[in-house]
Length: 85
Image 1 (cartoon, rainbow, N blue to C red):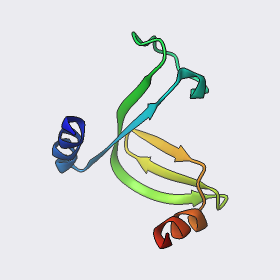
Image 2: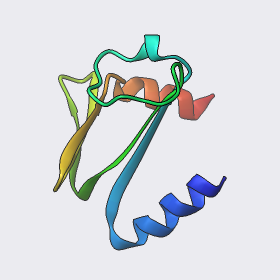
Image 3: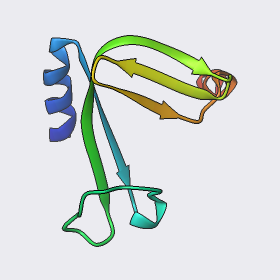
Image 4: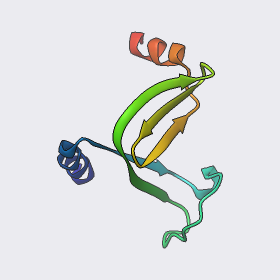
């Protein structure tokens, strides 16, 4: 809950922040920083000011910011289906 308030407060400056939490480091494909906790992984950062959001190849949501790019393999049809459910 505290983290959500911090993210929402920081987002007032129009930068887009992200947070990814994984239950196990086994779910992490690649990461170059060492983590104190041997299992849980938390990645936080900002991609900067939103420049565009688009679907690449119809299956990858790509959010482009002034400081980076966030990608996830989820199709537009999956998002629409989840909204309906």
